[in-house]
Amino acid sequence: MNQPSTVPDLTIDTAQRETEEFLTVQMPSSLSAVEYEMPLFSEEASRQTLAHLTRSRVDVRHVTGTSDAFYLVNAFGEDLLMKMQLNVRRFVVVYSVPVVSPIGSSTIAPHFERWETGAQHAGWMIGWRDAAAPTEPDQQWVETYCYARLEPDFLVNDLHKLYWRTDIVQMTRYFMLEMQRLGVRLSPAAT
Image (spheres, rainbow, N blue to C red):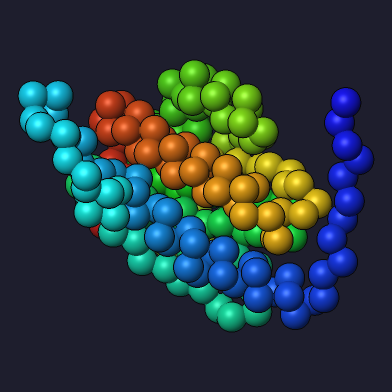
């Protein structure tokens, strides 16, 4: 039988501090594991940790006091622009991919049905849209929106944070690999 969930009594300062920590420390550290070196079966087992085998680099842009952050995840030879919003009990993760016509959301989304099904099983709702940045009207983008409701105690529950960090890393990893398989360049400078 499920126990009723209690909402923790957080101060605004605590909630903002936990949000900042998650967005600016925990997520960049986790995203550095989007790409990692996998030892071969023919090699002798080693005690190396993930921290020793990560290959990804992550740049973060964040304004203190806001509930969002931008990440440039460098993995698999590409740079993926990703935005995350954390609003106490709700996530929005947005992957932005530069495209050139005739490629758009309607041509890319069907290739992600399996990825989307897995994300839905984990608690995400996925949406796709075509966009243009106001500062770059000639550059077209496909944006993939990933929405999730969080547990009421998310900001103070380390297990919930671990679950969602790990899921975001895996979702990002396979998003990048599928785009690469499709031949879609992720790096804004590559278009």
